View 1 (cartoon, rainbow, N blue to C red):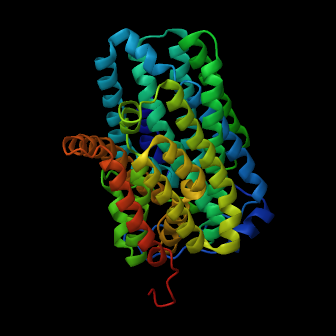
View 2 (cartoon, rainbow, N blue to C red):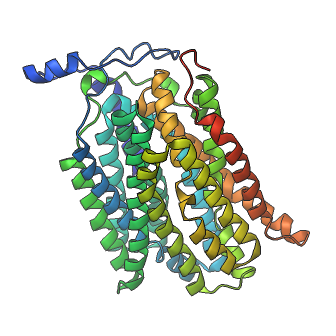
Length: 453
């Protein structure tokens, strides 16, 4: 369903990109005339000759925030219902392997489609892609609620996992349109959005665990939530990219390693991409953490529930306070503190479950460590003349690649660690990644001078 939506958008892009601009009133024309233009230093970006998006009032972020909260709630209420249904229908071993294949297939598809849809948002606008993604999730989850079955559930998991990445692609482009020249404000806006996502996930998990009626009820509620999110987006979210700032859809967007385009635009973007990869990779550990918790820490379902509820709650807290702290102290000092905080968590995981909880609480700001790199990529890329949709697509492409690498990497590290009597080897690896990120922060986040140094 989501792939069909993507195909429609891609085939429609060239036609819609060349339609004549809509007639505007005189005040709107005057506003567009005085809007600053983007610089055009990137190769292949010479067609970006239109005015940049006009500034939007801060109150316009509220509809996007409500949309995000509704969407995450709709996904979270089904988080604890799909796996038991699959296990009962297929058996533990087959269900586990099937879910792993779905996750890998979803991430692999996202690697291909994220750059395509990122470029499509520069042609069609952000809102159309965002609304289509939400509607696809609502439709397939509604079908599961009406007729629960393993094939439909597999399709639902696939679309929901891929749709989450595409949602943040479009939402990131919307915020990038508004704050691309001010990384501090972009970090503040992004942190609030991520806080709502973390909080919504924690609430959705709690609500979903209390719903009666099993799979039908959970997916029915999910479909309603996703439908409300789609309608909220359609009716209230304002398009951030006017017709005059759109560019034709380009075949070069079909690139499974699209993130490498970011590496061609100077030393700062290369360092930012590396910093982003170092801070994001520990997020995508696959099912390793659950397996480790059960086999090494002796946790039951209740213990796992405590851990996986606490982490998003702390993530919400970190992102809520992250924006104001960045505005007061700056990107580099805050990111250094957040990275050290995350380091404390992984050190705690080396020892025991209790120490992991202590490390997570003491290092509560660690969840906001990724803010600076992602926002600086948006700012530095805009200065290099890259459209925000293309930028968001390339970042999503990098994230999807890390999603594919992560479960394989951490699974192999766990097996290798057990063989030598060190099952916590994946946590030691995360400590190494986080330490490397800590040393990289002052160099990657430093603003270049007028000469680009």
